[in-house]
Image (cartoon, rainbow, N blue to C red; front, top):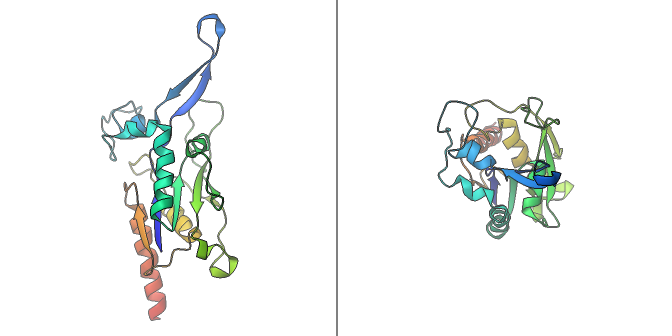
Length: 204
């Protein structure tokens, strides 16, 4: 099976403001991609993040996110996309068999709003042959794991990658896993670790 995990720069954050003339509302957006992956303000002195991407602004286009999903549908048997609760809409109508899993982050950072975001959705499309209960281990659609602080804005903890791979029914040694947006290398590390464990188990 060909599997893929995509953790792109997240869609822009939209909000409603009432500071226009006459008190009328207006919709404003703030680029997450430029702030965390481009040359925008990141709230600290480092001018270039570890995972700087010269085309970060591309991901401010909601159409780019929709196209990403369509490309994954076309090229892979199973896939997962990390995003934000408010970013789910950028992907439009999901495939009928897609599911939304929830990563709960106890150490989620507060933003500029009243509500602190403590979770992130993961759109998961499990390969058709691995959707039945009888095809492998059962996987919860909720993961509670702290976000790592390792210098990469979108880094996920090892538990996250193993959780997503388990949900996709990853078979070490039989499947290929593509990290569509390699950054910290956590996807490759998790896949290699699962392969090493499966190999050791098979040899014992």
